[in-house]
Image (spheres, rainbow, N blue to C red):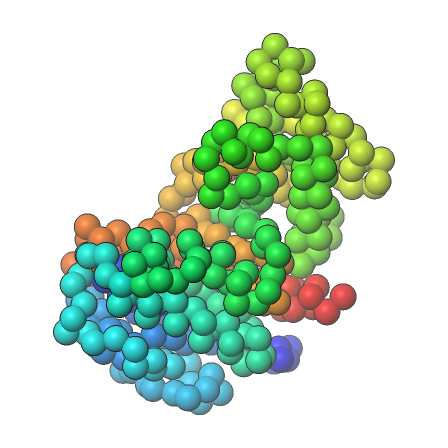
Length: 340
């Protein structure tokens, strides 16, 4: 649906009503830099959004709309697709509640439907709470799994971006022992291919992909584990023979620093914390998550619901702002890539 003259329409789901999601969503929409590249709108409950404005002492006007085309895209106006699915008086700030989990799921579902219909160019999501989802009987553990289920996507690819450094993940929410067991030659080769495909979706045409080592010093030729010798090196060599511009395994204690300095277009991290720690240490607030492989682009903050400060208006909106801007930055490339 994107036209060259139009800024992309980005739907922002407000997340768990008891957490900081609604607050950082409304605060981010006060940032004029968003409107230079995007037309943002919220998907959530009006009473929850208005309560968040009160928490943050903001006087933005709420413009309730039925479709994105009705929006007034100005930093003084919050365009909202209102979903009447929760009683604001029953929401206990900072507490796990089934009602909040159910409502958060429904906001994501609405955003997904709008994106699938072509009424949104991408979505950016505020944080949800896994316990609230579970208590609500939602059969998914988190955002990525929800979006995969709603779109029929098999195993979406997760990427973090912070200050130009891109980190892909071979595995996500697995125990460390299960993540290690998932490091096979076939899986590493498959993910090398998927990362390179993702570069195309993101408009990165010249690339060098690095594969992180699993063991200290990438195993030192088998002295500290043999996964590199048995699985990772064979996969990298096979990928090179197939024409992929990939290097590795490169020790995890240096590969992320090298990528941050521009030596690599991205790094394939082999397990959750390996890449999360690297990205969040660089800049916790500006690290964002991008889900690739869906029929549409999805970006997200890289933090949780922060129940301890919810309702105080103190939560920083930088990550939410960056997520919206990244959605706008990549939406055109991603849509074009999905059509190829």
